[in-house]
Length: 259
Length: 344
Image (cartoon, rainbow over all chains, first blue to last red):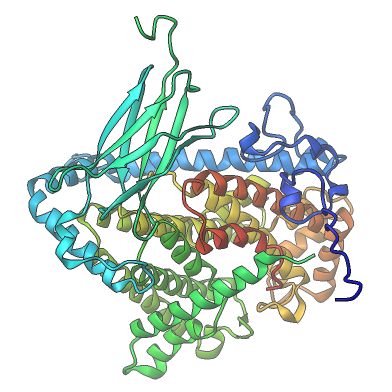
């Protein structure tokens, strides 16, 4: 090969994280102006972006935002955010009022859930078999699924999972299963509500003996930052979500720890 | 600069749109009376459209792990209901064109169009019912509850807008406009498709407020951009160009104009609002458009829409951060910015 052209490293188009509203929408950096200090949620900024980090810091209204067009965006979106929150609260109240039956029996959504829970408990055997059948049929219908359910293993679907926690401090936990699965692969638990974002990586699934419920084992390291941690439970066969594990690490008091 | 999101969104919209059209065809009767019912019923669904609502439902459902067949049936229900509301909206708005063709009532008259719209709304329940039969008993009621909520919010939003037109003395504010959009547009365009998709994927009910913030920020950004395109779109836009101005429809831009009028301009603006569509002149429409340009109302609306889209991206990262990366998840994210790159 004669005189091969030397491969050059391409020059990066930008040199700082593109984490603000306009950057995400392909706007020029020159337009960013006062938004340079914007932080992404993962850096501790408000998820709605710049202008939301300190509600007291800015008190501009639509009227005085005229000289600062970006102020108009921030304040307008903040107002829109308040508006949708009010709508959510109003929806909750409407749902409750619509749930009153003529006989005065409350059928609000939480009560409906209670009724359904009772119904499901009463027919739990029938329901569990039915869910198993639907689950296995669904896997067969889904042509894009990576793995087909083995008809001989439909009784081995995991619908409930035990938890084993090792922690120096106090924790609260919960598992929400979206649907039964043949096998479960828990993901590391992540919290973006703490700064800097923290993880709990010692998470494993123990299938246990045939016929017994599997168990997820979590070890919370000593000194783990208090906060709420979430970890997705994936189906090991097709990597789709089947549930979520939530773990709240409570603040440790000085008295806690080995005696 | 290339925008990979454009290609991803277009590809998914085409793919999911085709799937939904196939399923919708199964639910549209091919029987008598054809001429005055089932042919008009099948008209709008056969005209195409962006298929954004059903695609959002399918993508959300699949991102949460639903089987494609159930997701597509739910999406077909949403698209059929959307088309039925379009028939009614076109009558109420006195619109002349829809997706580049005459509106249904312009072709067949209001009585036949109204009846076809009613039938299409009823037919939209069927695919949803079949999903409910397949769903677990603890999922059926939340699905029906959500449909009732969406229909109620949409009707209330439409009533707000119709009321503003009926009473020209009303002066809606920016917040009034956003509430109207939240109810009329966002519930059917984004909140309900996402909530339904998530319920089907998770096979469980979801919290009452899930996806409302995301759907509002995204849906409002989409609607405001739609309002802007109505002014700028020309022949590439399916509805009449500047049709909103001919109808004196309240948008963020018109609200800004109303709030910045001089005393000399006010009487002409009042007259513009009071006139009917037929009696508004081209000079009046051009004058209001000129006012919008003069005070920068169109640019302000676009900037505000981008701010809302940023908020939608923030909500997206919160809602779907736990889900593994997938084409469907990327589609939902890219759909937010695609709003500003489309020309119709």
